[in-house]
Length: 319
Image (cartoon, rainbow, N blue to C red; front, side, top):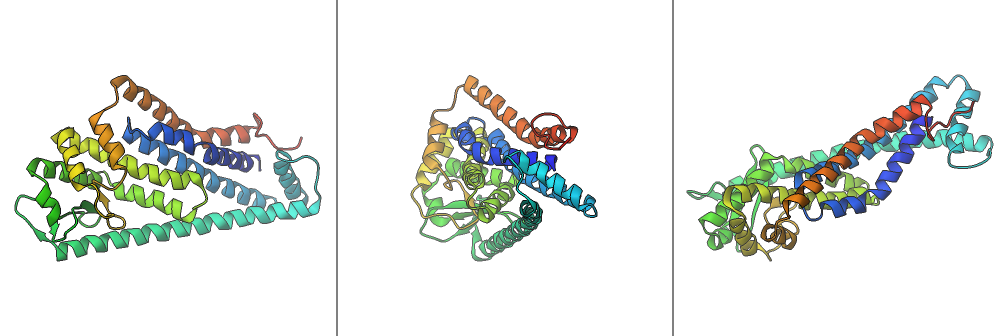
């Protein structure tokens, strides 16, 4: 029971304390790839801790099923870490019920996340297929062109992934700007950014009250746009991409589940392209984010090992 209790305490602390400092670390996008990795590591760390804790509770309950006294004693040991005194048989029964409910809730969340991912995948593939049917090809443009009054460029995952550019966007983008926009969209498709967004947005949808997942989904989305910006700027220069962003800014929102050059935080991204961070600042951010990622990846493992070995404050067993 001590392993489950420690993992739950760890995950609760991370879910409550991590979002704000992590958002400050990634807001400027000085190391966008590591920023995305850090957010994903923290989210997976919390969800993995929940799943492991539920599994540990279930295993201990099964092992002690034929020994009610031992099972009750184990439950008492877990609650003694957060409360004082003994509360009687009702608390023992309640704790067993809570463990069962927690395991059932995790299974339900996993099913909901799976359905959300499948739905997002089906809709994006349908959108991509529709765009290829409705749109047309223009010589020299590596994208499907839709006749529309809005200036927009975006990509949709599918088989294959599809980049969509409206005819109005072609009217305002010169060849250099268009090449930068297309490189931005190719970076999204090549990096499988849609899959990352589907995962984070799925967690945010099924756990809307958890700030880690709601804030994390928004921050991952804007940081992925910065990753694509960097890929486009390396190939065609920041000025070409900046001019394209300004030309496409102020248009209606992009279609649901689409990713585009003007999809998130255009002003912050334009400032980032105009005034890039100093090399020392970039290295400092990389170091800090790498440490955060390693801590998030190793935190649950270290917590579980300490609890299982009986070391530290996580040892909740009676002697």
